Length: 129
Image (cartoon, rainbow, N blue to C red; front, side, top):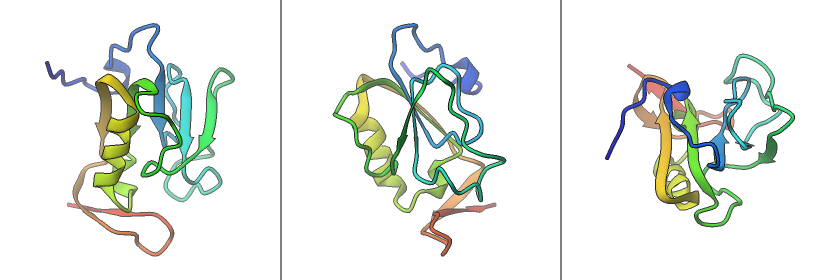
């Protein structure tokens, strides 16, 4: 059954679920267990420095090559990040690979119409319509 949450706070993540959040930057969900970010020292595409809560583990990683075992997480969150990927299809394949057998994920692009490759600053860039 597919459910359409209203946003990140409406995900109904179970208490014991292990949660990976990719690229949350300055606004991670408190519920996330592991935070992965490709550019932790580059705030060009976010509104501040990367925030990590004390209970969260931080991993510097590319969403297209996640350093986790298959089915390592119960839930994967990717909010307003996919449009920055050089290869969005590969990024999604990696999310599916590391998500548990139920394959729960929340992906919300930032009002992207088309996705184009890297724009010269080391980040992919969405073309906004």
